[in-house]
Structure formats: C-alpha cells, structure tokens
Length: 337
Ligand code: WQD
Image 1: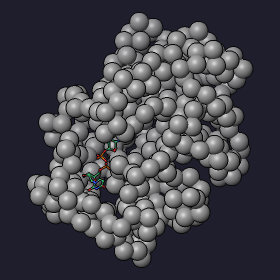
Image 2 (image 1 turned 180 degrees about the vertical axis):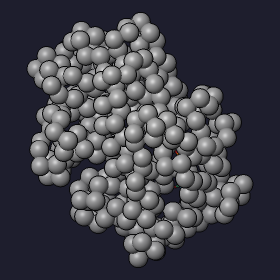
Image 3 (image 1 turned 30 degrees about the vertical axis):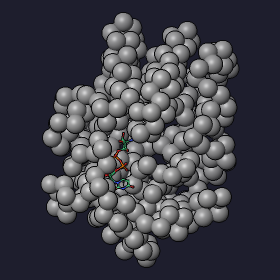
Image 4 (image 1 turned 60 degrees about the horizontal axis):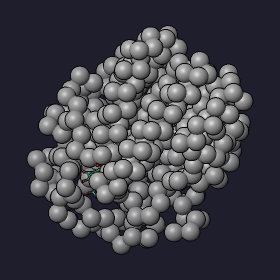
C-alpha cells in the first residue's frame, strides 16, 4: 500500500514525504514541477534513506492518474498540488480555478474509480473571513478576498459534499498558518521561483545578498510594534501533522477541518530580529506602505489538532529562522540566483 503525495516536490510536500518515508510508508509523488525541481526527490532520499517513486505529470491528465493508481496500489492521498500565489491569483483567476479545482475533481474521480477513500487536503488559514478575530477556531466564519483563497475554500466545500454523498470517503482539511523554516539537514526548504511574495524567503534572499533590503509592509497596525503579526510554524512540525491526520483518517468519517499553527503570534520585526541574532546576519529594512489585503494579526487556536490528532508544534521561532538560514547556506547559495 502506498500514499500518493500530489505536489510532493514542493515546500511542504517534500518535508511530508521525508516524514512518511522515515515512518515506513511507501510514497508515490506526482508533480508537474511547475514551482519545484526534480532534484528535490534526490534530497528527500538523502534525508530519509529511502526513495519515493516520482511521476512527473499533471493532475489534469486523467489517464496518468489511472495509471498511477493502478500501478502503485494507492491506499491514501495527501493533496498538496496547486497554484498558491495570492497576487497572481487576482491577475489570473481562470488559471487558479482550473489548476486547483479541476485537478482536485480529477483526483477525487480517480480515487472513486480505484476504491481509495482517504484524503488529507492542504488547506489554509486564508479560508477564514478577514473580519474574524484571532485566535482563529475551526468554527470561525469562512470567507475569502482572493481567487487563491477561494479555491481552497471551494475545495473544502467540494470535499464536504463528496463525504456526504460517499459515507465511506474521509477528508481531513488541514488549515496551515504560516509555514517557514526547513529540515535541519539543509537540503530541502522554501525555494520559490522569482521574487518571493512571502516574508521568510524574502528575508533569506536579503541575507544572501540577492536583494538589498526587506520592505516591511506597514508599521502602523494595532500590534505591539506596529508590524503584522502571524502564526509562524516550522515546516517539519507542519509535515508531521500530516501523518497524524493520515492516521486519524483511517478511522474517522466525513470531512473534518483542523488548524495547524502554534497558537503564538510573532511580528515582522520580531522575525527580522530573531533572524539577525540567531544567524549573525544583517537584514536592512525599509518601512513601506501596507500591502493591500493584509490584516494586522492572525494566529491559530490549534486545540482540535492537539486533542483529536494528538499533534503539537514543537519548534520555536529561533529553530525556524536558524533552519531557514541553514538551508540557504547549504542549498540556495549554491544555486543560480
Ligand atoms: C507575513 C507578514 C506581511 C513580505 C500568505 C498567504 C496565505 C498562506 C501563507 C498559503 C505580513 C509581511 C511579507 C514582505 C512584509 N499561504 N511581509 N514584507 O500574507 O500572512 O500569508 O502566506 O496558503 O494564504 O496569504 O504571509 O509571508 O506574505 O506575510 O512585511 O516582503 O509579513 O505584511 O504581515 P501571509 P506573508
């Protein structure tokens, strides 16, 4: 029996493959390499000591999906594959709905055809309505202000309806807060194409000298130091949460949502200061205007994941920024900028 990991060469997918392989699961990755590199498969093997099967392909290819399910006897699915840039989704909504939703429907159809009934879905805290006050609970109001977030919300609703129509089907919806850091081996990490949108890869590029300074998007929020506060979670903690979810899915029913966050809020300037102090680097900052769509404070109430999945985040901010820089020195510094 094997676990199919869609998008398994991506940031969170690759870390989850390491944890699965180390726990003895057989892993099959399907990835179109749109926002990742095939070398990640070698890095996963180097860390875990076991190699996943890698299938280069797209979930829009239904024949390929049937081939994979037939050839590898897939027992469960962890579904990461999808486009995830908020700003790009506003410019290219059709691409986001096609690539994120049609692919998921193809995947569900293939699961039905091959009697595979367990899926763990990579959702996001972005599904919560911007007006909800942190700490965010799974029962908070849902609502999205951009096409990317709406694809996550729509897929959650699709999976809820599929579980009602097919009682044997189970979907665990994992709502990530802000995943950062890297596996301590320094061989896999966050390595987006182009200029990073997210804070940590941007800070890392400044630390590498590839970008001159960090633009801090607003310091006039109603937060302790005026900069945005988020719930940063180490990507290895996040990856481990997928194994708890996979295990729970074997006996659970229906579609169930869980927040994967630390429950702690950290500001932009606190992240910068931790990065500098932990790694002995200088991150020049420029206070810039607020970024449209940003809110002041977002962090999780992760009680459900703690109590029902038996999962707890273990790493702290210092671990996250240290491992982030370690990945940059070992891997990013040796790659073409
Ligand atoms: C974090 C903080 C910015 C960049 C996004 C997605 C969300 C999820 C996680 C996928 C904010 C500030 C950032 C910069 C800055 N992704 N910032 N300068 O916006 O909380 O969440 O990533 O599911 O869907 O929306 O993360 O890293 O972009 O921003 O000051 O150059 O850093 O204002 O306060 P965000 P982020």
